[in-house]
Picture 1 (tube, one colour):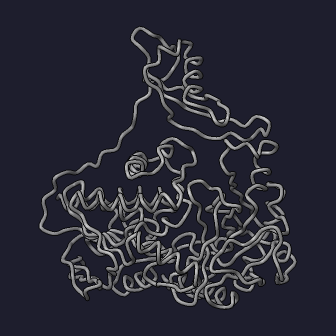
Picture 2 (cartoon, rainbow, N blue to C red):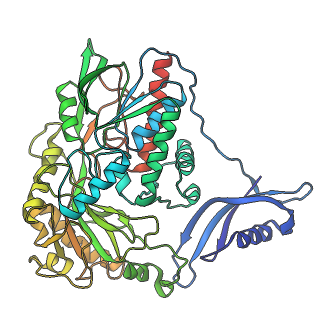
Picture 3 (cartoon, helix red, strand yellow):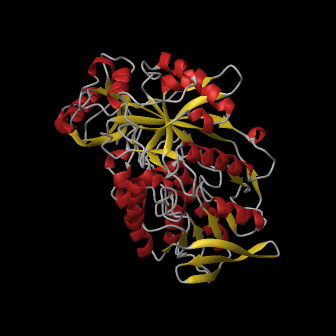
Length: 525
């Protein structure tokens, strides 16, 4: 098999176009190609009048056909290093998000029959609960955007990008594709699944786990640990049938970044943790068509181009920085609260990304110097303060405060909105969003918006909308673990984004596999 780099193809290219391009590069006849496909595909939009897909392809050629100067191509496949482990006790995985489910799948593959504790509902019930919340403002604190099967990522854009290269990533993509995700995530440089496709994918992964001997218990909340002589002996659980204890010597903490009461319980049980830096800010919304024009230029209406996104950073005069994060092209701003009387925003897109607006988080970093104390959970208190302020500013009912960019920069509350209609449900209330942000954060954002407008035309459009408050871009806590993935209590393994070791679906899933290796290795020994 041969690898061919740097093939440039027009938007909307077909498989036949790719085959012809491969044949030209190899200087052979098309009939001599026995097999071919895409290894990697990314959009090059640097030249607005010549936007192309840049493709790395692989090809097999017939016997006796020579393709000089081309590198060999070999598929890299990850295999879990343990099989057929025999043990009396089943490992427990707390959380069914990407970290938890991938950890559980690998443990089940090794014969360990894990029990997954999910405090929220299965994905079918969760969808109903979330839609009811969006429609009426009636929050279920156990089944919502943060809690339930699939984790917080189930209600997102489903991005699978990460800044690292790890052989486990291929296994993550393979599992998602087998569960029903689009096959293109295996090669696109910016893969995404979309919230509408993530939901059946989560269900399919549950079915696979059950087939391998694992199980997921819904509305099963971990309420305590049985620790003796520095080692885990069991996990206390409150479920639909009441309270019970699971005897186990292996617990994976894949709890997600919003399990605040769980962090409090773990801290009380002696699990070592630290306050961690994170970021706070707002969601900014533009018309998707205008983002497309800014990024693609005169070909912005070309239907074969994906909905455009962006990635921006501004280093402010005072030493802090503002940046964009989790951009959702053609998506909507969503209500992401998990606690009563607190307003929180996030972003979500369907696979097609065909909504009217584009939204992204507009954030400023915060750290221990900004918190009221040096307590490991001080970041949680900081988040709660901003979320309560946003709830009051929104007028209750989980409405969110919103403001035009022009009014925000000029420090006045908005009275009405223009061409950009806020997408947040249950609804927004025109307000001055600076009132639910730290003063320094509002100042940095006011400085950053015009700077971003110089990088992407129209980013600081006065009619763009800011919706507050965004506080949960990452975990405010890091549960300390050693180089082998173990916490200070023997048998406890912190994992994923909530534990402070990942920053999105892909990195969380990879960390889940990594911790499964540690758990299986310890149980095998």
